Image (cartoon, rainbow, N blue to C red):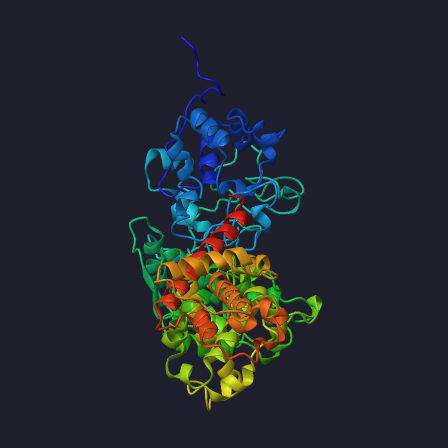
Length: 622
């Protein structure tokens, strides 16, 4: 009989408890086997995994998701299924909660921007750690729950109390990893003999050893706190609601949790401006303490989104989440006004809170459509970061990029979203202002740079447009008109996002010095004449100008540009601008009552479509 490869099974094991974390399972199993957690991982084959020499130096972010060999090794050693091991990590919450991607060689999740998870400490409920009275839990304690490490879990619904996070004896964070233990999954990785509920904080001589499951006077949460916890817990369950309202629009639970993260960070980074939104005085005082503790000598709060958006103290975390949840219950316009009121005026010159950068660096699809529609216009003003010079930074992170923006957007899009305002100014001017502003949002920089990128000689007069748009006229202060115009631009961007993406910049580059060859023009003209009873198209010297007009028409169709900005017109014969040939005009715009003109326009469109597809295929290597 051939034995399976890998480490042998341990002499005995345990069944994982509901919502038990990887760390908690290792602590209980080590207590039952009278060995250290590090020894279990060593026997499970972790020492040789991913080039590690010792099992004791497994990084704490491994609890996010184990590699395949690590998962299979622990499952074999602990007599579990692969699914049971995966349930000890956070990967199963990915569909419901915003988690960072697993570690890669290029980027460690410990340094990722979107890290909203506590891997270096855990909140806890003493009564849950004491167990449910069963023999196995009487001996080895209850579960260190996986959900206790989520910032959105701050109360125990079973025992109606706020979670703790410090040892009552030494004051260190529960299961805290600090100092030279930062590379370890469990504090005291090689220490044996400690009960799972004992404090494992290091001192100079020994571990603290205080029991965290000892009875203590519970901190009873306010009614609002418990109600919010019940709603958030329901959203975390796999069978929970599939949609929730946020800032007046439906969204997924994952997007809603991202909204909570962003607005709770806004609440603490603008504290005490948001203090009046706290539901109780006691909760406000907990945030007062957090703000004082987090402020350095200069008095400014740190700009790291991970430093304040997930406080260890359950009272402070609950208060910030309650404020965020209350803001998100309003409609889009009300949320916009609330955010605008919270942001300091000095954000126009320097993002002192760091919250603006936090929002702009977040993927557009990560937060809800309602919050995006509310906040993006507020942040869409000429701001820059002093350390990065005067270059304007990108304001919109989307799955499409500046190269996907054409010069000329479909006019029905502008009429649909600008409404009556679309008739207040020239459609050409409105087209130019909209596309330039959208490219600026995506790429940063100035409007002049965005205009050059698109092939315009200069941007449209943005301020003149705002003054003439009925939807923005009379708004005060003047920045509100900018906000309103950006709302229109972002709505138009939604149309671009919903369709298939084309690299228009690649097409503009490929056709920058292109003109229809004489032979190709003659073939197209001959085909049009053959299909329309042999009628002629132009004669004598006009054939050259007709070919130029056909070249511009093809460029306009392939690049979705405006014929006035076609590069070919800069080098066209001098009589181009003086010539008023009706045939040429009809070729350009596809309006003709003659059969030959209609047929030629159809042929030019087919030629332009085929040319565009060839450019796209060359860019993708197909």
